[in-house]
Image 1: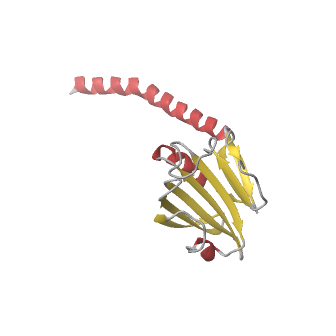
Image 2: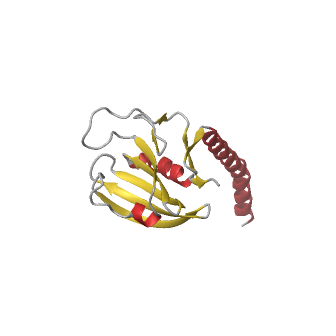
Image 3: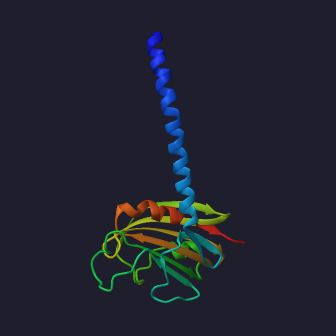
Length: 179
């Protein structure tokens, strides 16, 4: 038994510095990632996305903001190329329930909502929808935040494959409301 405990103690002594080193490396990587992010704002909603993304590649307006992680293809139809992420933020003059309701006459891709979350972001009511689409981007996460009685800001992150899902979730989780 004494021999077993000696071996166990030796293994722990060898493994402990390695575990600490890996933990320190992960913390440094997280800090590097944070330094590579840019805070974007629309109305009083802010979110973070990589600073090297293309901002408003199709033109800007006061009530909308669009980002892509790389050049959007010129061709249309079918699904977006692998690895492409699109972020769309808009301000609408609607209350939260109206903004999140399905609008049969609106120009949206046919979709299936796979999950709905009711949230509070900085004291404001919000709804987050996880959606699957039949065209364009196969998946998306869309968050609606009520910023006033008749104002809702929508942040949609649309992605083409599961490899980018973690990055999309990070963008959604960075949403804040400024005062």
